[in-house]
Each structure stands twice: as C-alpha cells, then as structure tokens.
Length: 65
Ligand code: SF4
Image (tube, rainbow, N blue to C red; front, top):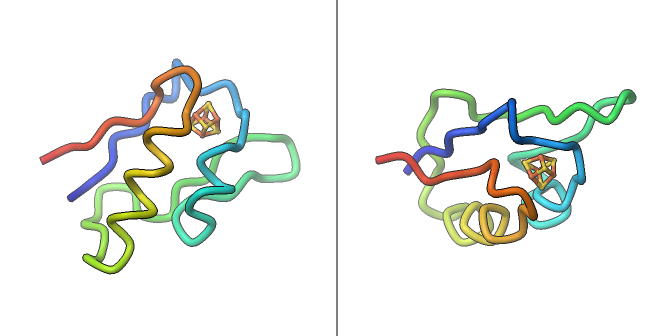
C-alpha cells in the first residue's frame, strides 16, 4: 500500500506521527514529513499506517492502491 498525503488539508496536528513514527515526523516548524512519499509501505508497517490514517482529524491521509 501507499499513503497519499493531502498537503492542503494537513494542519500539522501530528497525531499520525504518534501512531506511526517510522513513517511520519514533524519538523521544527510543525510541518509534516512523510518518509515514504511515493513508495510502498512494508507489510510489517501497514497496521501502523492504517492507524495513522484513522487518527488524522482532517482526513488528510488516504490509502492509495
Ligand atoms: S494527523 Fe493529519 S493533520 Fe495531523 S500532521 Fe498528520 S496528516 Fe497532518
């Protein structure tokens, strides 16, 4: 799976980074850094990835085929 990040929706809440810190971190200015941009997420991290998607309060994360 891949995750699409809608940068226009993201408000930097950081909940995704709490759920999946290997995939998402926040920079010093509160901007989201997504470490797998355009790349498949390993099977072992899919659960955390889906938890991150579910945690986003503004639905900025979606699962891409
Ligand atoms: S939880 Fe949603 S709004 Fe918050 S940083 Fe992650 S993608 Fe952005």
